[in-house]
Image (cartoon, rainbow, N blue to C red):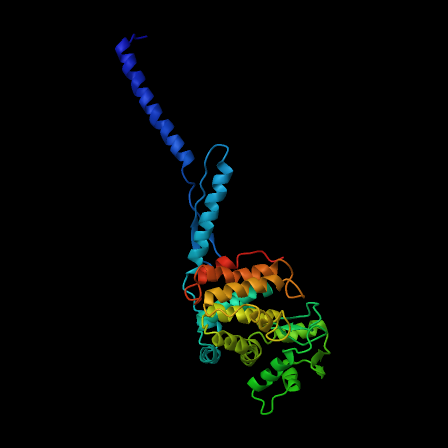
Length: 342
């Protein structure tokens, strides 16, 4: 064995220690840095990147959760701002009608309907419910379509379902539109008992026949005309009467009207407006309006708690964040509707 000098051993040791130091530093950098980005698809098919911070120590789980929460918000925003053709959710005639009678365009009405449909169907895909029909057991008969037209019952003696079928007959070209004519076009049997429409088909047949109308242009047109006559027209009038024209205020009134009734008792839109003060400042008035609605929105079979309070919070949160025109508000709408239905 060859003998090496003390000086040579010393130099080799120093060199080895330097290499070891670099190795340790690189190792720690690898452990403390972010993991490789993981691609995941949002509901609309947009691919975004999620980065999770993996830290050692007792707080590693908290750090990972916090980082994931932040990146999910960013992912939601990125998915939301993807180019969306809001107008594609309406027929040209419906768009023209809504613009002329409410002053709001397709983007604004699309966002209003998303906010409406979340607490109604737990979905932002409101266009999928033109063919919806169900007896939800609230003594209002069958609930139908995108705004929940009802056939009537002990809790609803002034239903809008009969008007919907008459409007369907008219939109289909009838010279003398009638409820009976609309029922026939829908393939349903029934008759009026006072103001209430009693359908005589089985539950499965009723659901099947209404579902078959999902893409029927005349049915969709009738749906919007009835929606306007029953709830939208009054809501717009009440907003404009107070000098308010924003999409958020009109949408808030429409949501209240279809959920609790346009006129009538203290729980209706009319009743809540009467207790919301007389401020001409839109933000002040609407803040009072939301507070008054919150007090009763989970009562009288309007909503199952706490869905009602969350329903109102959607609108009040948008007001607080300044999203009053509901334009370029896709991300904001997704954010406020991100709550769990009970």
